[in-house]
Image 1: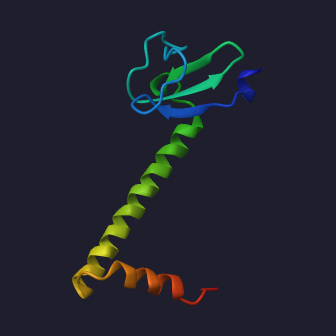
Image 2: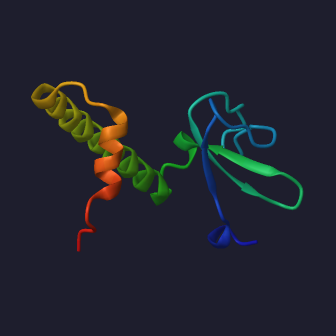
Image 3: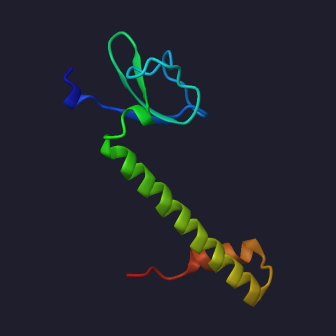
Length: 105
């Protein structure tokens, strides 16, 4: 399979191990941080993020993470504002209101 047509998977060594976990670019073990890998007929071939910085998927993953962090920050601010205004609410009452609201178009 040509390099252009490889399907890469992206992972973090803290949570996922793939194959021998040895970087195909520098030859060192991958023990921490993000890495990518692809599957061959013989093995999973891994590469440190720092050894393949030109991959545009890293930028997309960074942007997704930042968007998720910002969404969480805004959500927490809204929850705290709700709590400050209304105090603690009955979770069952809250879910009833949410599930019974009219559909928005």
